[in-house]
Length: 198
Image 1 (spheres, rainbow, N blue to C red):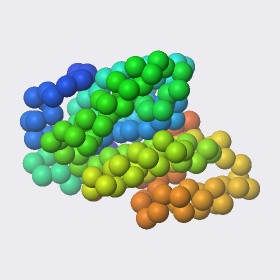
Image 2 (image 1 turned 90 degrees about the vertical axis):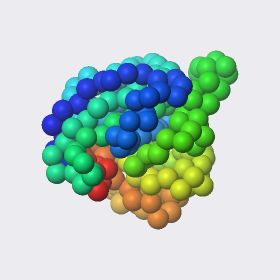
Image 3 (image 1 turned 180 degrees about the vertical axis):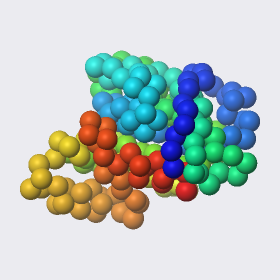
């Protein structure tokens, strides 16, 4: 599967007609500073599609991108929305901001009537799943979401402990598929692209 075009449509913070137009939605979620924007940019081959920042927690809205691709299996064409959710678990923000972001994430993923074709949960491969990651995975599981786990930053893991680390991540998250990924070295890009358009 090849992504042929990607463009930002709009940011939303409440129910919006764009999320009700029947185009499939694939949501990307992860802890602040996990490299979510870099994953999206390498996946779409657009250097600055999702804004990366040295200040975690910058994204305060749900960013919707329209993606066109060749080789997907969507009914009625190969177009989907990539829905980039704010990062969770950013401890340095105010409690009010944290609560607002968490409320926005949970509203879109769990409380709204919007259906996601897949939810891509990005974790830090070197660090492994945090408590926040596991809570998010549990919530998604409870809601019967189709979850794909991306273990980002695998280039940071020492070769000697790579297999052991991935096995520990698999043991922690259970039967979900894990895609080892490096935005830095563009490892896992094709596998993720193929997985989200199955």
